[in-house]
Image (cartoon, rainbow, N blue to C red; front, side):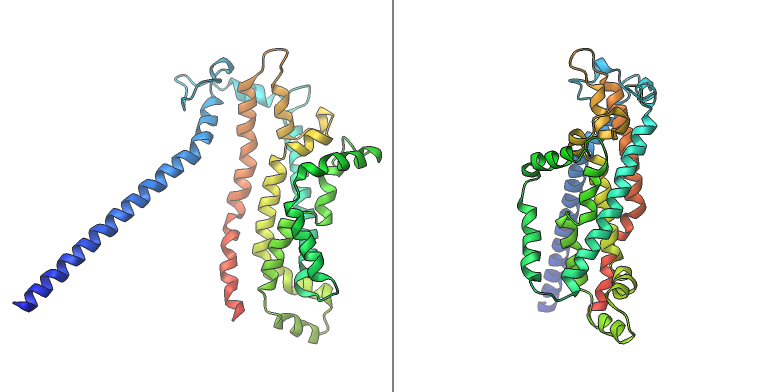
Length: 296
């Protein structure tokens, strides 16, 4: 009798635990779906609004129109202010690719110096670099603009790209420093025995192992540059030089009718390269897990 009671009690406890796990799993999935719906709602609404006429966009919270039309995309593809939409895409692509190249090169070099080279004042310089993350960007807007204006670089891409090649993005430098510090120093010593200097160690040893950090930096640098509005707003004055976010402002005219439909259609088109870029490289974001075996 005692054995049967214990068995029944154990079976009941097992069923209770299974029901609790099932309930927890269901609640977890429901909560995840609700959160996903909240996150995706603006994007779905944006797509639905791009298929509505301009007069039916403002104040309408519905997702999809009853009779969708594609005139907004046609007007968006025609361009604005006498500039074709392809020019805006090329300008944004030029800045985004230049930002990726400059950020990756400068951040990797600075990170290698902080992570693998011992020199006087390294800790102080690294602390000063990290402290720049606490400095609001808006504090630097006026002095930077005055400098670039006096040297005649306003309405060019130099003010938007120069800092990328000078390792001014402290976040990316910090990201790569933390990754490089996790790589074993035995690799450096082995390379030095083979006659390698810092340049060859950096190029042939560190960079191949730091590929996950480089890909992560590239993804975020591309997205941040592609979506940047404030920088082009400050430094670009000619419509021929406008990027996509800057060109979207041309569709809003306070003195006449604003073409919200074409602006939203242009916004949807501007999202396509970012999504494709992320889908192409997002698998590299998790590659850092595979390098954990090197730390043994």
